Each structure stands twice: as structure tokens, then as C-alpha cells.
Image (cartoon, rainbow, N blue to C red; front, side, top):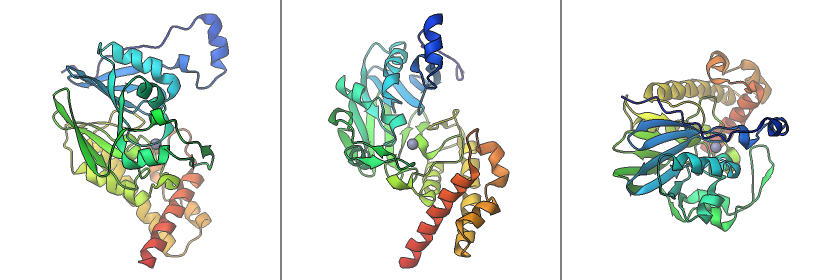
Length: 308
Ligand SMILES: [Zn+2]
């Protein structure tokens, strides 16, 4: 039935003159359209700039999973308003990254209750660094989750049960998967994307945990499950399985080389990602960087196992 449909374009019309100035900013929000895809009655995926958003609307109001960047909030609100007269009551964060939590300040200030795993609140409350070692200052109090949990929680909303499950030390140490139990829809945050994963070791992520997270989720779903990825197109079980299997092959290759005492340069030269790069590499894939990070990750994992 009416599955892949509605492309509700909410982008503001930009007058010709303004366009020239905006075109100079690569991320000018006025250029970005929110696209809305219906996944099940009252459940949608919104894409725009930043992480994909999950949305539920119904008798209880509206709730969103992730909220992209601060400058996207007006467009997110407009997209929600096309489907619900009620404001956003709950914001669920799949993890701490700014392209998924940037709208927290505005939604929090407007009275939305922000829900996330304990470590999201912990890490957003302090000054940290990102994957490139650039400082990320602590967020304002209004942007912090006010309901947090360690392992799991359930939100009973719009006639469904939204089950939140912590996926430890995966993309970060803050990740959850959100499952609409009745509708059979999932939001996996950045524990499933369209390309080789970013494993954010500075925020507690590990490649082994990332693979385990995917195994956990594969055990929850069936062939009809619709999966919102953190980035990239809507996914399904077969695609998640293929992505997981690819990661296991690549991880095992790297782990063997690390165990054999190879250096980072040697592991990069062995090109353990080779036959997958066309499918999962994407435009900006830098094999030396990705394999280098995975090498450091697997070396750390091996040292931890040896200490035990
Ligand atoms: Zn992320």
C-alpha cells in the first residue's frame, strides 16, 4: 500500500537574488528541503541536512527521533505541522552527535521532553572533542535530555510502544535503537548508515561493539521491518545483514593483521576494504583514514584482551 510516497517539499522558496549569496555557503539551510516518507500509519522518515529523523503523529501528539541541526528546526517544525496540529511533545536522541541533537535547544525551550541514553546527557554536559580532535563545548542545559536510562525504556505513544535499547560502545557509548513494536519500524541512528561506519572512539565507540549492535538488532527484526538509518536511504533486514557481514569480514582481516604484528601502514597497504569500497565507500571515502582508524581500534581491542 501507500508506502514509498509523499515527498512533501517544505523548503522555503528562495528569491533569485538571495540565491547567489546562499549558493556560496555549502550548507545554506535555505537550499535544503525536508522530504517526508510515510513508513506506516502515522510514522514517517524525514530527511534534510544531518541525520535522518523519525516522526510519529497521532492522538497523543507528535514525537521525533533526532533533530538534525539548530538551523533546521524551522523546517522540521514546518514538516511536522503538515501532519500534526500539535507541537512536538517528545524528542528522542539516538546518540550525542550534533547532526542528530542540534535542534535540542529549540525543541527543549519549546517544552518538548528530551529522552536519551544516560551517556548522552553525561557527554553533552561536558566539554569534549570530536573525531578530528576539535573541541566540542558542553551544551546548554535546555538541550540536555531530561529523561535518561541505562539499558532500555519504553514510550507508550500514539497507540504503539516505542522501545529504546542501548547498544553499548558501538558508534559511540551513547547509542540506542528505537523500535516501534507494533508498526515494525526501527530507527538505528548511526549504528547503520549507507557507507563504511564512523566509529567514534573518542566518545566510546568500538568496531567490535558496532558489529555486536548490528547482531542485537538483527535478532529483533524480520523481513518486513523498515529501518531508518542515521544517514542514507531507508533500509531493511537484508541490507543490514549484508552491511554487518561486510563489517565482520573487514574487521577479521584487520584483526588478523594486527595480531600478526603488522604496522598501520602495512594494514592500510593490504587494503582489507577492497571489494566493498564501490558499494560502501561513498564520495568522500578515504581508505587510508578509515583503515587507519580501524587498525587503531583493533590494536586497542587486542591489548585490552591481552590484559585480561
Ligand atoms: Zn553520529
